[in-house]
Image 1 (tube, rainbow, N blue to C red):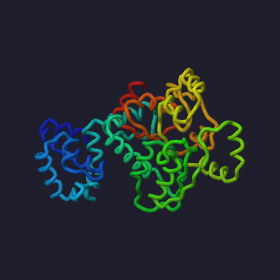
Image 2: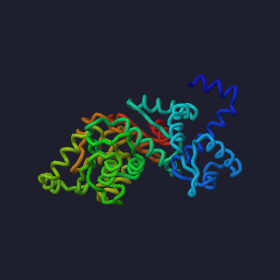
Image 3: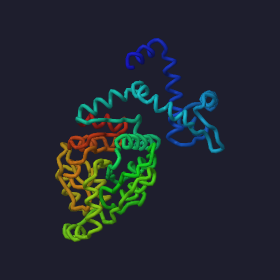
Image 4: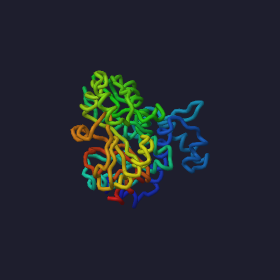
Length: 340
């Protein structure tokens, strides 16, 4: 495929430019769901006249449907985008970047979407869509899936779909709540994934940050113990990655603990653990949920995070060495490689 693209770029560069333009139109509509012509033209930096001609052609091909609210993709359009994805990755140079990240961190698979989710909501949505696709491809009947909370995880859940109901599967929260907006909590994300797929779910109604005494007490509760045992037997774990200081504040750690974390070189946070730039754990909390040994025992661990600002944190967590799959964006991937 790479050699064919190279020949086309030399002999008929206009063809690739037209294909890239039409792909971007279809992809932007897919990510947005429904989009009006004026906002679509502005987001793609095209004149309305140019865009109108392209939309008419794509509609004639049965790839778009026009409604009162704007343009949406037809089922044929969605299938075409899926079929084009390997070609587009080669065209944009993402395949080489995926292989570079995969090789550098010894991962089983890397999926990279174009752009920087720090600066574009469209890239954030695409990151969630890519994460949902990776998770659906990883599922087997009877799997228990433990999921973390966060905004990127919530976007992943919003895009999640499967071809047939998952009656034998379970979705569970990997940890307790952070005390943040309910739609971003792991409990909410687990229930959303289950409802979208016909699967079952359990909730863990305990705080994420516990004192050692509170942890020992709450783990004596039979209902809590039952859910925690299920969480710790998950075959698949899906988690986000964050900046250590930011996540410490979100988890409401006291200022002395935060200062100690930073003094110890904490750079990244994932599944409640804090890592330095070498991927070593520098802090762990008593929590009713996944432990480090459960992460190590899980068959598939999927990291989902994007944005240039998280590149160094992603590199630190990947150095920890227990992720199998990374779903990220172009800016974060390049930054992670720079820090590798």
